[in-house]
Length: 365
Length: 257
Image 1 (spheres, rainbow over the protein chains, first blue to last red):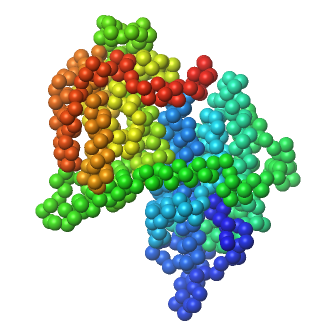
Image 2 (spheres, chains in turn brown, blue):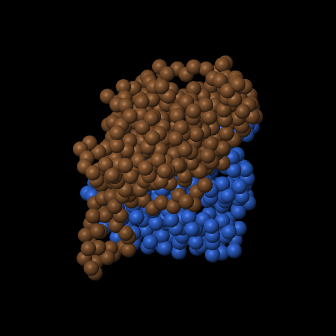
Image 3 (cartoon, one colour):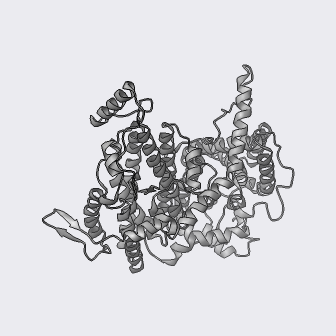
């Protein structure tokens, strides 16, 4: 069994080792295709949906993109938890726009995954049945308003560190989706930082709220980069395929180096007594991560695993009659449209089931 | 003199909040409609039936919140007005405070309100009153809200047996809250309310007909339902909604966020 970690979409645990290109019983043509694919990827050329690709490459991408998409939609929950309690109308607008962006990211990513021959419905079923994962970070609760800021600053900050290299990923549709997502994520991160700054410079109670949130979110954010390089079985293959560009530990270090001075500017401390600048390495040293907690939360024992998945399933189940209605309506009107003179009398467009909404999110920040 | 002065038992608090300036009073009525409906739509986040609706409902909520902020700022400090008023000082229609219910209830509420808001803002935008610039901008948004409600009314009304039954029930249940939309609002003197109501009945009726539905038949006016929200009389779930909305802000008096 392969344990899938949501972070960076790698696999860890008892791994299957570096995979070979998917050409089991190959003839000359198969070998040529595989060689051409390897050469194109090595030359940093983009792989597009109609190009030949090894089965394992396709499967690995579907898994990573699905986990990424699932993380976006599950990630809406901890933040949406504060929409109805946002303490000012300005903050409420920022938070609603952010949660909306995450839904939008989910849409891009499911669509990008569909270019590999899967469907959103299929991927959602796998999320709901627990066959595919989402980022473990969202199994932690948002206990105070400051958590909204800590998620923006630390969780989105870690996500950006992970995701910016994916903008150069070998698979074209994923890389292009990530360009747009990263722009919005960096906006979210600045908003989170700015929220925490207002609290840190605010009343004593607000400052304490900010510090408490950072204390709770720091370590789980470091875990977002996935297990240490030595324990990350599929990293090597992902890097050879140019899906992944840097190792987990390399990215984690990059994040720590960025976050430490930012914490100082915020007037907040990070909960690690071992955190100090190492002149020789040119990096910050930091303390040991509690990997037992990481694996435990990943296994389903985090504070909110059941709650998150159950809310997702409930929303999906309670929405079934709505999706059915949209599908039935679309089917009726498609039949009418088939008859030459019988355009829908109302002038509406029959849309595919499950994709019924008008979407004008471009107008929002 | 505002119409609530004689009958409103908490006239002092309400008057302090609305003031006697008719423009301020109208800004508060329209601003509260937008603020409260935006809040209700925000409650859908993470619960919508399909991902596209997460985006669409949030979008409408954001448009409304933007309108609310402009309108409440015409009446005073937006945050003081949103977070520090008591229930009886809010001037929104009862319709917009009604709980989300199932998706059909939310769509029925959107259908009734967005068609009203679109007609009203179109009229305000065409005039030269203090709300004309804001209405001119908002009317582009309300056109989209109206379209969204219309498309879903068609899908639900002309979808499955279940969706049709749910939509029918939602339309009936919210019908009694529609009468107060056409009670004249102080500060909006130029508005032709009876004509507005005629247009609303005609346009909403046309959508329902295309969806294979009809306008409900129950009463839309009555001692309690007509104009009650505009006078600071609300429904029970509203107080609980405000408690949630205002709690954090009120827990830190004087703090900036």
